[in-house]
Amino acid sequence: MTTTNTDPAVADLLAFLKFPSVSTDPARAGDVRDCAGWVANKLRAIGLLAEVHDTAGHPVVLGRSTPHRADLPTVLIYGHYDVQPADPLDLWHTPPFEPRIENGVVFARGATDNKGQILAHIRGVEAALLGTSANGFPELPVNVIFLIEGEEEIGSPNLEPFLREHREELQCDVIAISDTTMVGTAIPTFTYCLRGLTALEVHVTGPAMDLHSGIFGGAVANPATALARLLASLHDADGHVAVAGFYDAVQPLADWEREAWKALPLNDEHALLALTGASATFGEAGFTSIERFSARPTAEINGFASGYQGEGSKTIIPAKASAKLTFRLVPDQDPAKIQALVTEHLFTHCPPGVKLDVVPGHSGRPYACDPHSAFGQAAQRALRHTFPGKEPALIREGGSIPIVTTFREVLGVETLLLGLALPDCRAHSPNENFPLANYFAGIRLNQVLLREIGATKR
Ligand code: BES
Ligand code: ZN
Image (cartoon, rainbow, N blue to C red):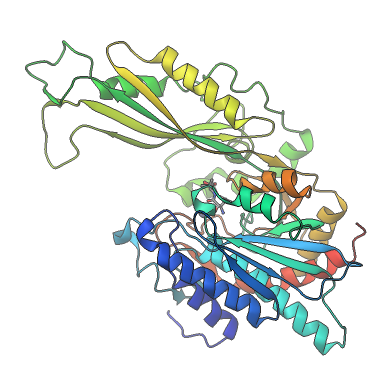
């Protein structure tokens, strides 16, 4: 059932979701900029100072509460207003940038990742501001800085220089981000670890042009076969990554982690199969599915191209083959080292008769923090308050937000990851969605989070 919802918080979300702010698509640069303008106006409308800052790429929106109170802790809230491309469009039930509410769930590109979640932060701060004035308190319990960027989905290429340039005005005590998952509906979740990643492309070339496979087949190497063999060499028969040295820096899982994760919903293999549509679980021997997708490093083929892709058959030996790879990394793996090890592996294992090129892509470091730090405990109190009667799940997240490690390095502070996304949110996929219940819970959570951080000793 589709409903019209007249709640201003929902109207705001729908307006935000209408911008096709796809950062990777140069044709959308104007929409990305318009979206940044909308975010800045939103921050101003709730009473913050806000500015759109140009970068070498898409703009960054900065907002701050005013006046700054030196006696209060400062929390920096980070999020992104850019989104992934909506393709393949034909798999969407309704257009990705015409948000639709069905049975209390909003469907649109960016609904979860990250517009719904960052707007929950903004509205949470607004609620705190309104609450404080209604209660007669002069100000928020904390100073708030918003840093909302437009290039997260392309690896934040311009954010580190921006952080260094604006280091002084971004000084804070802790960072809060809602851009990760909850382990299930209404289960409060605190993420203390994110995987990193490193990306590369592999290009294999053979003959100077596509060849007739009857005239030449068998006498020259086939680049598609060579690439398939090369990629197959990345894993052994037990699902371990077979690149020499790949696991050298990997920290073993603690007993408490393996024990605690046994109680999580996705420990149930059926739930994982239902969610993914896969026919069986698969992965590294000796680890559960949760451990495999959140706490172990992986090698993935994200794209593979070679030869004839049209209808019917075409008897050729393709001139070239290529693949896009990413490696998800865990503490304490170093993306640059892994790039080097993988590149060496590829050159050592490349079958004869073809030429190999490896083109490095973007990288991001993994992140781990102490869930029991003072601010970590404050965050967990806010989670308990928002979801009464439920103990927060402490998890590692399989996805990556590489800027979090850069925050630690440049600003010297830790990040609280309080995600609101559900495992079936379809982030990066067709029919991305976000339940309004999560949006409203997020607004309450963020309001309480400010109070709990305000009450925490620095
Ligand atoms: N919100 C995600 C991070 C994430 C992914 C959290 C999965 C929870 C589960 C973020 O927008 C994202 O997609 N990050 C990219 C990394 C980036 C460098 C392209 C990712 O993880 O692939
Ligand atoms: Zn994303």
